[in-house]
Structure formats: C-alpha cells, structure tokens
Image (cartoon, rainbow over all chains, first blue to last red; front, side, top):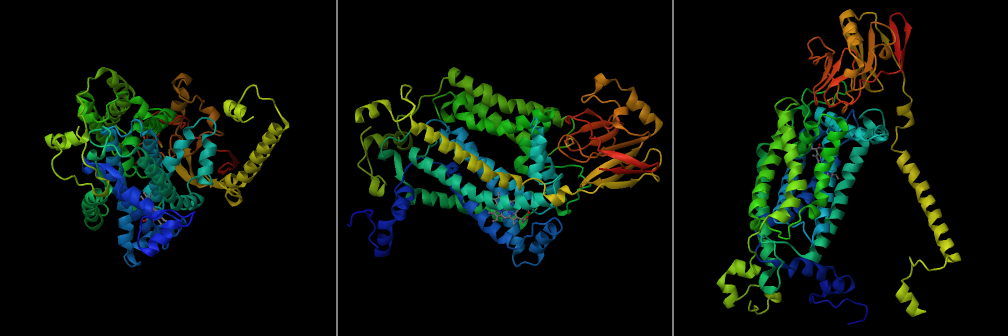
Length: 428
Length: 186
Ligand code: HEM
Ligand code: FES
C-alpha cells in the first residue's frame, strides 16, 4: 500500500480506490455495520432511526413544495391552494409535509420519553442528550415557521402570538419583535424571512443530528437495563440485527403515516387555517398545532406576561439540566420502583397539559393548567433531586447477557450470533 | 527551554512576563473583533423595518357619523385602531376607578385628547391579538370595555387592563383633531 493511503479492507476495486483516499466506506462499515450495540434493545430504540427517516421525508417533500410555493402575503395562500388542486400530486406532497411534521413530533416525543425513562441522559451521555434538546428546539422553530407559510388565519395569528412572546423580555423586547417582523406587525417582510429560515433550519438540524450521532458513537447506546455492556457477549453488530429491527419499525411508522395522509389529512390541523389571513380579525379561539399545546397551556396558566413566557421557556430549557437534576446513579426506571410510578404520573400530567392547551382560557381549564404546571416542574426540580437520595433501587443485573439469556449466558452454551466481532463468550 | 514550556504550559502563567508579542496578539484580536462586528452590522440591520415600511402614511378618520356608544376600527401602520364614541356613563365609570385598582395606572383624562373620544391601538398588550368589544354583539369583558379571547385579558372603558395576563393598557397612538369631526392618527 502506498504511504498516505488508508488501509482499506474492501476488495471491490472501485470501492477500494475511493476508500483508500477517503475512507467513508470504512466509516459506514464501522459505525453502521459492525458497531457493537447492546443486545437487549426493545422497540423504543427504533425511534431515533424513525426520526432520521422523518427528517429526510420533510426535506424531500419541502424542497419540491418550495418549487411551487410563493412567499408573498397576496399570493401565499393561493399558491398553497394551487399546490393542492393543480400541481400533479401536489396534495400528496403537501399532506405528507404537513402530517410529516406531526409524525416528526410524535416520533421525537417518544424518543425523548425513552431517554427519560431509561436514563439515557445520564453520564456519560449528557452532551448527547443536550444536543438532542437543541434538535428539539430547532424542530419547534422550523415547524412554527412552516405553519406560517400557508398564510391562513392560524398562520397569521399564531405568528403574531408567538413573535409577541419576545416582547416580554424587559427593555429590549419590543425592539427584538420589530426585528423579527421587519415592520410593525406580522406582514410581508415577516413571511419572506420565515420562508428563508424555514428552508435553512432543517439543514442546521441535519448538522446537529450529525453531532448527536457522533457523540452517540463515542459513548455507545444505552439500553433498557441502563447498565453498560462490558464485553462482546452483551452486544450485537448493528447490521443485520438492528437494521432489520429498525426496518420493522419503519414499516409500522409508514403505515400510521399513510393512514394520516390518505384518510384523515386534516384531522390534526385546524379548519381556520383554510381561511386566508386577516390582520384585522382574530379568530375567537387561537390554538397552536397539537405538538405545542403543553407549552401553550403553561404559558396561559400564569396570569403575568413575563412569568408565563419565562415558565414556558423554562419547561423546555429544564431538559438541558436534567442530567444534573436527576441525582440517582441508576439509569433505568425498571430499577427505581417509586420514581418509575412518579414518572408515569408526570407522563399523564403532560397529556393533561396537552389537552388543556387546546381549551379556551376559562375556568376550570386555567386552574387545571396551573396545577399541571406545578406538577410538571415539581418532577424535575423536587422529585428527581430528592429521589436520587431517598429511594432504594432494586438490585441491578450482573450483565446484559445474564439478564437476557439467564442461565445460558453463564453456561456459555450455544453459538453466539455476532459475526466478525463475536468472540467466545467469557465465563461470567 | 523545552522543560520549562512543558511544566508551565504555553500560556496563562502568572509569572510570565508581558512581551511585545502579547501586545501584538491582543491588538490583532481586537482589530479582528471590530472587523467581524463591522461586517455583522449590515446583516443585523437588514432585519429592521425597511425604508418603505418606515415611510408610513398617517390615517385620517372622519368621526362625524359615529354616534354615541358606537365604535369604529381604522387601519394605521397595518394595525387596527379603535375609535370609540363613549357614552357619559362609560366616561364616568372610567373616571371613578381609583388608581390603586390599576395594573398600569393612568387616569382616563391622560388617555384622551377630547371628550367623548377614546382612540387606542386595538392590539392586546399581552401577545398581540385584537380584543373583542367593537361590535355591539361582542363580549366586552367584566369592565365594559374590551375582552381579548386569546388568553382572557379584560380592558375597561378607558381601555386600561383590569384582569388577565396583559401587562399594559391599550396604547394611545399619537393623533390630533384636524377639525371638530376629523382626526389624524400618526
Ligand atoms: C424539520 C423539517 C421540517 C418541518 C418540521 C416542517 C414543517 C412544516 C409545517 C408544519 C408546514 C405547514 C404545513 C401546512 O399546514 O400547510 C410547512 C410548510 C412548508 N414547508 Fe416545511 N418543514 C420542514 C422542512 C422543510 C424544508 C426542508 C423545506 C424546503 C426546502 C420546506 C418547505 C415548506 C414549504 C414550501 C411549505 C409551505 C407549503 C405548505 O404549507 O404545505 N419545509 N412545513
Ligand atoms: S393576546 Fe390578548 S390575552 Fe393574550
């Protein structure tokens, strides 16, 4: 081998030629082929791959939609209707994009929930987790600006309410809002810049996803037991074991997606967004898209502008410090009998907040939202720091292999499916 | 030499003498920072309202046809402005309120130019919805003025916030009466 060339293991001459000069094939083989992955994943570990598929779907449908979309206040609404009626398969592209956003949030919510339940945010995966929160924030910004583009009533008034959140910032708030709008109200300059950013942010998400995966491939994946694999008997090569498991999930995911797109494409949307934007009339009942409702409920629970905005922001920012709020060394809730129950209650509480966000700002909804807001924060700020000290966790299994295979692991019986990486099993 | 570098590190050593090289590094970094700032300026400034947006016309309103108790909405700078011909009872109610009851204390007199007209920007100071209360059939809230359905802010007959999350009274725009029955906003 000539010096300066990568020592490629590939034999196909073309692949080898490229790989020697730029070892991308070696990298893919290492990170997605032989990558040692805990053998005990359940289906909740599908959701990262699903999110990746979903991001690709959003970009592909978005790029072709953008070829027919016009970001101007007098034409935006009509251009979307033209996509629906005149562009070949335009309805499919738009419904896939609009419902794709909902699917994206469902998938990412499950993905985040999985991380919270199995303690995937704990050392050494704190940075991996924080990058995930960054992705989540970018997704929210992207989806919010995308929803403004069709320029319906909800687009306009959603944009008005959300941009006005920044006016709560003391001193500079109003200047910031004027800079966001490029004017004195949500208007054409706002629509233009939102379109520009809506096109840009998904590619920034791609960048952060890359960092997220890079960090993951240093620490390796967590698993339902929350204990680290400590040898080949605890892991499987990613391919074919998890490529096939992820494929099963992708098929189910596409089925759910297809039901939404083909049978109930407007179920998750709001009828008012089929009314062209009217800056002179606020709809009687403004609601954001369903995936923002829990935070909207928190916003409305506080009868003070700055306080509401601060708590709403805090409800997501608190995730950044979650690795330090949860003081327990045990990752998986399976071994935390009390916190596990409290986490399920927190989960229900999240759904209650979601449903409150869709209700008018009246009693008893405001009171319920207030109680739920307290519970939401109490879990992070009181329960988790205390439980780490007070709770006595259940005994952890000795290893993943013993937990999964029982006696067989210790007896060392049977062939180990492990391909190239499998070594004779160590006696535990 | 190599030994002392290794043990002291390459920078951040308190005993390290200030040299001409430090000065050069600092001034170079300072110039680079100023340069980056100067280059960032046009990008940020381009986000501000452009000249055509700033070149706002004022809005003339003929209030002659507006009868007692009636309110009209006019557009100024892309925003609605409420012009309300208040009844004597509404004015009396607005003036009877003690300042201590107000979140954003302002007397009714300080919010008007000429009775019976109340002129305010119809944008809720919470998050920018348009409060209801202009049409006779609209809900007017607990204080007989306006009610913002978005998050439940109530405004009184002087358009001052009395309840709900809004922090401030509805804004009074700059305006002047050009005759007995006409006013110009802006
Ligand atoms: C993270 C990925 C993305 C998310 C979550 C997202 C979300 C959304 C949402 C919620 C809408 C409103 C759909 C509706 O109600 O009509 C929308 C519209 C739109 N998006 Fe995206 N989007 C993403 C990526 C992209 C990309 C990469 C592009 C273009 C390059 C794009 C172009 C468009 C266009 C042109 C519209 C307006 C047409 C329409 O309303 O259907 N999107 N987006
Ligand atoms: S915008 Fe009026 S109460 Fe929130």
